[in-house]
Length: 116
Image (cartoon, rainbow, N blue to C red; front, top):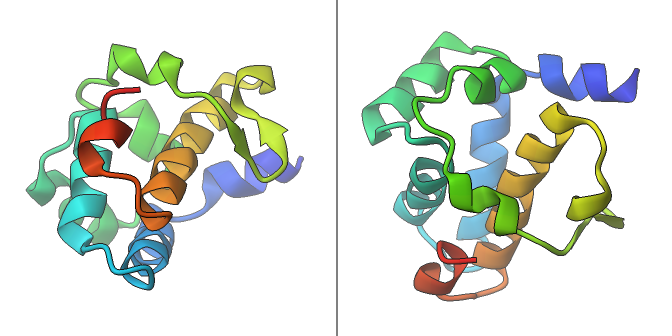
């Protein structure tokens, strides 16, 4: 049931949290967008439109123009759970983005983040 809450959250509310996490560590909103673009295929304009329309977090992923096939190579732990052990495919998509933003906030070069 907890997953359903996450899936139903507004992307318009989550996006600023992702940006804040990265910018507090000296990264830019544009870098956050680059990560999202790489993962989902959205354009910068489409990201802002999704924020404005307040679509659900899950719909943001469900309607992504082109989920990057390389995303399945993303590994590691997020919120104490190994990504590769997440069974729910919806939650796995969300956690891929969480992991990439974590890496960005930790100072990892963008080039290395986008080439798992």
